[in-house]
Image (cartoon, rainbow, N blue to C red; front, side):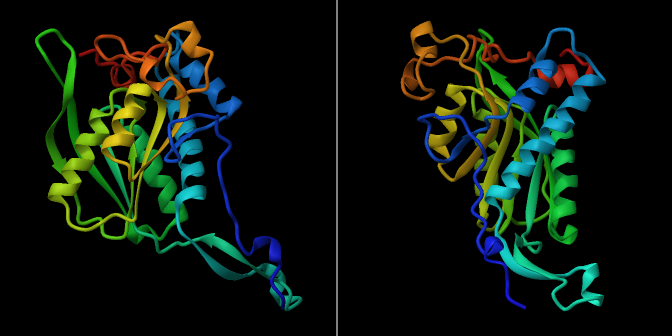
Length: 272
């Protein structure tokens, strides 16, 4: 049987907005996801709707990241038609199921997105090679209440990351301090070199992108929306990243604008 050439090499790139932040940044251009995200962030949306929308949106994000970033391998799959004809075999590129993966669960806003991501990867990959680590982090503040970084208070890490795809689901990419703290911890404390690192966010800011792309150029950033709502009107009229140093998406206390408020608080009905 001859293989169908259309499946021989599947280059996949998500539909993304135009920007000047660099090739490692992927901001999806998806009206349906933006519609659901707008509802999630709306003032009147509370639990359980917030959690339901969050799960749906993270399925979109991990779908795009897996399709674009994970290794692929040529495969032959006998379909149910093979009992009738020898041509009942499909051949083409598939996601390599033996790819190891590590999902980093960040307390507290990242716990639900991490579980969605972990479950999704267990469907796509060999579950024996998919692991979920847990880290408890929190913002560190100066006396004026401004964010100075992220503190790591506890962790449960189940092994090394050699050859693995490491996925960090963190809904709000505000300052970049959380992702940076996680990656620095893995670099110092966890053995092995990851094959790829992917950060998955609902929303990112220009400040986040500046921090992460400079400090961790190995990270592939996927987001549904870029928020730079505190930028001047003239800056908002430009292609994102064109006047990067003038773009602003964070208040003085590092909350995203327009954003969606403290998502960890809203998800858990715990406003502390």
